[in-house]
Length: 170
Image (cartoon, rainbow, N blue to C red; front, side):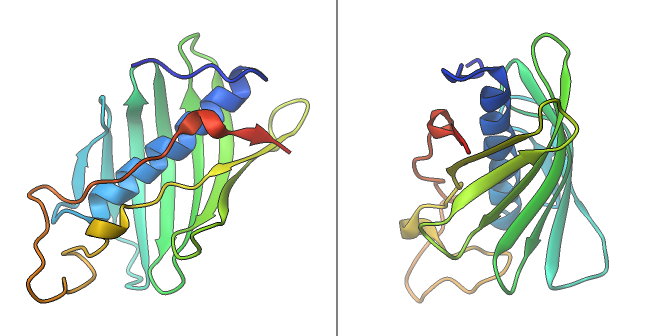
Protein backbone atom coordinates (compact mmCIF):
# COMPACT_ATOMS: atom_id res chain seq x y z
CA UNK A 1 0.00 0.00 0.00
CA UNK A 2 1.27 3.49 -0.77
CA UNK A 3 0.18 6.83 0.65
CA UNK A 4 -3.12 8.11 -0.72
CA UNK A 5 -2.88 11.23 -2.88
CA UNK A 6 -5.40 13.82 -1.76
CA UNK A 7 -6.67 16.14 -4.48
CA UNK A 8 -5.39 19.19 -2.66
CA UNK A 9 -1.78 18.12 -2.39
CA UNK A 10 0.84 15.96 -0.78
CA UNK A 11 0.66 17.74 2.60
CA UNK A 12 -2.90 16.48 3.09
CA UNK A 13 -1.86 12.96 2.15
CA UNK A 14 1.03 13.03 4.63
CA UNK A 15 -1.25 14.51 7.31
CA UNK A 16 -3.80 11.73 6.80
CA UNK A 17 -1.09 9.07 7.05
CA UNK A 18 0.25 10.73 10.23
CA UNK A 19 -3.17 10.41 11.90
CA UNK A 20 -3.61 6.82 10.73
CA UNK A 21 -0.13 5.81 11.93
CA UNK A 22 -0.55 7.44 15.35
CA UNK A 23 -4.02 5.92 15.72
CA UNK A 24 -2.80 2.48 14.73
CA UNK A 25 0.07 2.51 17.25
CA UNK A 26 -2.18 3.78 20.04
CA UNK A 27 -4.75 1.17 19.17
CA UNK A 28 -2.21 -1.66 19.22
CA UNK A 29 -0.89 -0.50 22.59
CA UNK A 30 -4.34 -0.22 24.16
CA UNK A 31 -5.64 -3.54 22.87
CA UNK A 32 -2.68 -5.83 23.45
CA UNK A 33 -0.61 -6.62 26.49
CA UNK A 34 2.57 -5.32 24.83
CA UNK A 35 4.56 -2.20 25.67
CA UNK A 36 6.25 -2.15 22.27
CA UNK A 37 5.53 -3.32 18.78
CA UNK A 38 5.93 -2.65 15.11
CA UNK A 39 4.00 -0.38 12.80
CA UNK A 40 1.58 -1.99 10.37
CA UNK A 41 4.23 -1.93 7.60
CA UNK A 42 7.45 -1.35 9.52
CA UNK A 43 9.13 0.86 12.07
CA UNK A 44 8.25 0.59 15.73
CA UNK A 45 6.40 2.08 18.67
CA UNK A 46 7.26 1.83 22.35
CA UNK A 47 5.47 2.90 25.53
CA UNK A 48 7.35 5.69 27.28
CA UNK A 49 7.42 5.52 31.06
CA UNK A 50 6.42 9.04 32.02
CA UNK A 51 5.38 8.07 35.55
CA UNK A 52 1.83 9.40 35.04
CA UNK A 53 -0.74 6.63 35.32
CA UNK A 54 -3.41 8.92 33.84
CA UNK A 55 -1.54 9.26 30.54
CA UNK A 56 -0.31 6.74 28.02
CA UNK A 57 2.59 8.00 25.90
CA UNK A 58 4.06 6.18 22.92
CA UNK A 59 7.26 6.97 21.08
CA UNK A 60 7.10 6.24 17.36
CA UNK A 61 10.29 5.50 15.41
CA UNK A 62 9.80 5.41 11.64
CA UNK A 63 6.44 3.68 12.14
CA UNK A 64 4.72 2.92 8.85
CA UNK A 65 1.02 2.63 8.16
CA UNK A 66 1.82 2.71 4.43
CA UNK A 67 5.01 1.58 2.70
CA UNK A 68 6.32 4.94 1.52
CA UNK A 69 5.78 7.19 4.59
CA UNK A 70 7.55 6.94 7.97
CA UNK A 71 6.29 8.65 11.14
CA UNK A 72 8.42 9.47 14.20
CA UNK A 73 7.45 11.38 17.34
CA UNK A 74 5.25 10.97 20.40
CA UNK A 75 1.55 10.23 20.89
CA UNK A 76 -0.16 10.81 24.25
CA UNK A 77 -3.64 9.71 25.34
CA UNK A 78 -5.28 11.01 28.50
CA UNK A 79 -6.82 7.88 30.02
CA UNK A 80 -9.46 9.85 31.92
CA UNK A 81 -10.77 12.21 29.24
CA UNK A 82 -9.77 10.27 26.14
CA UNK A 83 -8.00 13.20 24.49
CA UNK A 84 -5.12 12.30 22.15
CA UNK A 85 -2.33 14.67 21.19
CA UNK A 86 0.74 14.00 19.10
CA UNK A 87 3.70 15.79 17.60
CA UNK A 88 5.17 13.82 14.74
CA UNK A 89 7.71 14.20 11.96
CA UNK A 90 6.54 12.58 8.74
CA UNK A 91 9.03 11.52 6.06
CA UNK A 92 7.50 11.09 2.61
CA UNK A 93 8.69 9.02 -0.33
CA UNK A 94 10.79 11.97 -1.55
CA UNK A 95 12.56 12.18 1.88
CA UNK A 96 10.88 15.51 2.67
CA UNK A 97 10.19 15.78 6.41
CA UNK A 98 7.11 17.62 7.65
CA UNK A 99 6.09 18.19 11.29
CA UNK A 100 2.45 17.91 12.30
CA UNK A 101 0.56 18.43 15.56
CA UNK A 102 -2.43 16.09 15.84
CA UNK A 103 -5.39 16.12 18.26
CA UNK A 104 -8.57 14.06 18.61
CA UNK A 105 -10.94 12.63 21.18
CA UNK A 106 -11.47 8.91 21.66
CA UNK A 107 -14.70 9.49 23.59
CA UNK A 108 -16.67 11.87 21.34
CA UNK A 109 -17.86 9.86 18.37
CA UNK A 110 -18.38 12.81 16.03
CA UNK A 111 -15.24 14.80 16.79
CA UNK A 112 -12.67 14.94 13.98
CA UNK A 113 -8.91 14.76 14.26
CA UNK A 114 -7.34 18.19 13.82
CA UNK A 115 -3.99 18.57 12.12
CA UNK A 116 -1.77 21.64 12.22
CA UNK A 117 1.69 22.51 11.06
CA UNK A 118 3.28 25.83 11.84
CA UNK A 119 6.73 24.97 10.51
CA UNK A 120 5.59 24.87 6.89
CA UNK A 121 5.08 27.86 4.65
CA UNK A 122 2.30 28.64 4.32
CA UNK A 123 1.02 27.34 7.70
CA UNK A 124 -1.27 24.37 7.36
CA UNK A 125 -4.45 23.20 9.14
CA UNK A 126 -6.83 20.35 8.29
CA UNK A 127 -9.38 17.93 9.77
CA UNK A 128 -10.08 14.27 9.10
CA UNK A 129 -12.25 11.63 10.78
CA UNK A 130 -10.48 10.49 13.94
CA UNK A 131 -9.33 6.88 14.30
CA UNK A 132 -11.95 4.90 16.21
CA UNK A 133 -11.96 1.35 17.53
CA UNK A 134 -14.85 -0.84 16.52
CA UNK A 135 -17.64 -0.55 19.11
CA UNK A 136 -18.01 -4.32 19.01
CA UNK A 137 -14.50 -4.81 20.40
CA UNK A 138 -14.15 -1.67 22.52
CA UNK A 139 -13.07 -3.42 25.72
CA UNK A 140 -9.35 -3.91 26.13
CA UNK A 141 -7.20 -5.94 28.45
CA UNK A 142 -4.86 -3.09 29.31
CA UNK A 143 -7.32 -0.61 30.84
CA UNK A 144 -10.75 -2.19 31.13
CA UNK A 145 -12.34 -5.37 32.32
CA UNK A 146 -14.21 -6.95 29.37
CA UNK A 147 -17.93 -7.50 30.06
CA UNK A 148 -18.76 -10.94 31.45
CA UNK A 149 -18.91 -13.54 28.71
CA UNK A 150 -17.17 -11.39 26.09
CA UNK A 151 -13.87 -12.33 24.52
CA UNK A 152 -11.18 -10.27 22.88
CA UNK A 153 -9.59 -11.62 19.76
CA UNK A 154 -5.98 -12.78 20.16
CA UNK A 155 -3.71 -9.85 19.42
CA UNK A 156 -6.35 -7.23 20.14
CA UNK A 157 -9.46 -5.80 18.54
CA UNK A 158 -10.58 -4.83 15.10
CA UNK A 159 -10.04 -1.12 14.44
CA UNK A 160 -13.10 -0.85 12.26
CA UNK A 161 -13.26 1.36 9.23
CA UNK A 162 -11.36 4.61 8.86
CA UNK A 163 -10.45 6.21 5.59
CA UNK A 164 -7.46 8.57 5.57
CA UNK A 165 -8.48 9.92 2.18
CA UNK A 166 -11.27 11.89 3.86
CA UNK A 167 -8.89 14.63 5.04
CA UNK A 168 -9.95 18.24 4.36
CA UNK A 169 -8.04 21.48 4.66
CA UNK A 170 -9.62 24.13 6.86
